[in-house]
Image (tube, rainbow, N blue to C red; front, side, top):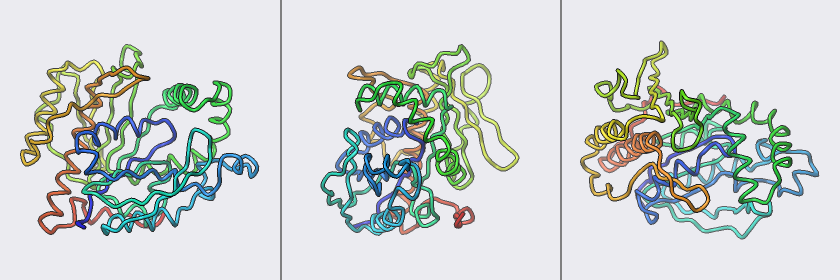
Length: 314
């Protein structure tokens, strides 16, 4: 089995991980993508966590060593027997046998916690929305899909705050791309019109988009002293401007033009389909890195990560 390209998407609960990855999986094809959620590797079920006064965010509540071992197997093209955590009732289901496909999407809370885990990924993304926005999404999701009351969700968020601050947010520094969704300049925070702020780090070679930014187009870019690039896509960006930026990135992936059969940027709220131009830009940029890494591996390379930026144990 050829080595799969592995995308990591890490962030706190309800940060938007599944919304981001669902469109990528749809475009790449379900049959070509192995999906792994590191939250399946909880050591204790919900009842046991309550008895032990542990949150799911704490490393002691997760089989971190098993996550690293399974990710290494996937990177080597080897199958795994993955545990299953059932969010609807907080119990464990039967494990699932997974054979790696051409791509692997690994999302969850602690995906970058150790160096052994971090070094597996070809592309690392971290989602860091403002806490007020994430709490709103958490309440909406857990009340509508997981049977909680608003008071229960808010109380759990408060209980998890110390662990989120100590274990989840520090993982941002190990990512290649940091994604921050923000209310737009009019204060609008509906998901179709959120601004997107991307921190692009030199650990990956990002496409040059400088020719498409500036003015009042709704897309801006600036360089930081540490070599990072800050790309801002306004939620109010004109669809034709966002489409031009997407097109510029697609042109760098002419070898993958056959994938342009699905629209990026689409997501659902309940049963209603919505679309965000800023989300589409984020997705096509991540897709660019996945496909260029795939091309590198096909030619005998090791991916597109800069060797100088490989991480060491924190």
